[in-house]
Length: 104
Image (cartoon, rainbow, N blue to C red; front, side, top):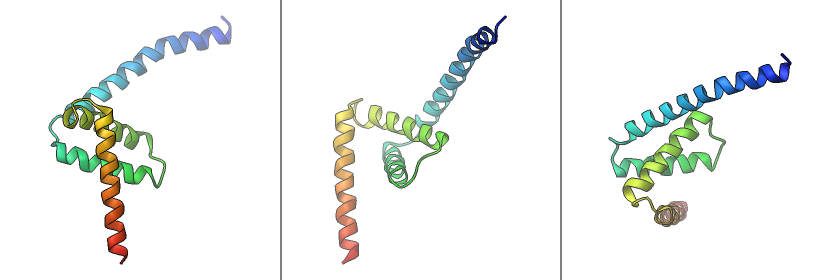
């Protein structure tokens, strides 16, 4: 058997396992976030935004932030990304105004 065939066979065997593991991780994260309040999801989302604007997130943190964002979108904004985006923009404006006041 050629090395390309062995590599392809290994990939074909490991890819479904990786996908199942990833799906199980996602489900566990969603289960944990189900008990978190909407206000807390908003705080987490904004904290993720602040950190991500200053540095590259590691994969675990990025996944956590992504799951929190999805939960927030579903629970606070009835699944509407546009509403989530409008809220996020308003929060960014509030933060900018607060920062200007604190500099005076």
